[in-house]
Length: 200
Image (spheres, rainbow, N blue to C red):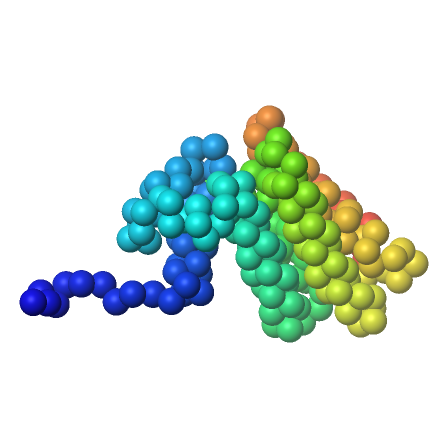
């Protein structure tokens, strides 16, 4: 006799998607080392072996998370580009201290990239490299649009400028973790970067 409380069985694809969707905020909040696969499994309502059947190892699960987050970041940058009057204005908002701090605080998707960069496992490091390269390509697309509209300098390749922007994002995270920079300094650094990106 059915009690009405039994769970509907998910298809294999839906189960995998549910695991992945649950793992993203877990890794973003707790980091790679502190995230337990058993906790992810419990939140999905499956056993830990089911997670491993779907993704292999914890590192493989994190690689899948990283790839999904890179997808989301790419789409987010494209959407921001469509909604912003100019690319220079978009970069000013995107690189602002408050936005960067939210992105790289516990639970922010930027933490997934930070965890990948600090992870010693080769598959994770390779996936991190791919995710960063995809992010730079998406940033370069925005910068090309800015070059076409005249808000971004044209004399430097957009991919080079994309790496410059990503380097500034990582440098901001480095400063947050290892120093106590002032808001005035962060504002001055943002102003300097934007001056480099804009046409002379």
